[in-house]
Image: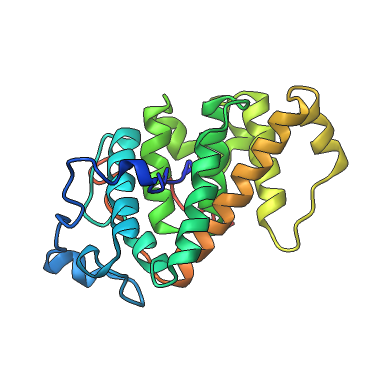
Length: 231
């Protein structure tokens, strides 16, 4: 979500002096190695200081957001770290997104969750399900997501936001005027921009991870998880 997605906190010069060992990152175990992506990422011991700081703060923020700390949480960022300038730019985008406040947080979380089930990104569904659970979504609602049109567990606005996600994610993207008008009756212009941005960013996150074969990290391990929408 993730949202959301992950909240990447970039390294500011004033934080370099914090009493933190950024090189003290967990080493993946044998099972984790079997789940590694199509290319190996840049491990903390080989990364520069700024990249290690991004790793550290991402782990910390992810744990705060999800209440869990799987060892492979930074795997997508380790892949981005092959191009440090791109990682920094992506991090700034995620940081700016994390600071958005106009849209209701639950609506943001649900829109991102629907988008990621459409993309069928294992890592994203795993993460977004845990974030949605912490936003108050029940197991019953998580399982009802593929048939939300026929469910009375969601509000009209939530259903319209999911219709919007479907319209944006499918190829070619086609957003009906009537659907946009429904959303506009309940959301102001700033909220519409944020909703659209969250869905579009989830599309970027998910397709990047799918292309590199990044699998679920274990955020929802042992709990109910949303399922890919392959209809």
